Length: 66
Image (tube, rainbow, N blue to C red; front, side):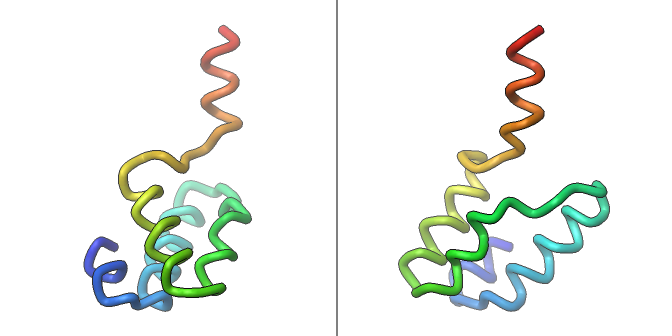
């Protein structure tokens, strides 16, 4: 995925992302639709995801409520 971001390859990034989310039987967050707006959005969102800043907030909320 990192290589897809470095080469600004949205197709490869989304292919890997979709495979990972479908393998976990989870819905892809809608924020990822913004990667198609422009290169800056793609890099910002993709790097944020790869560094863990974008995650499954529903699960995070459930864990913190316990």
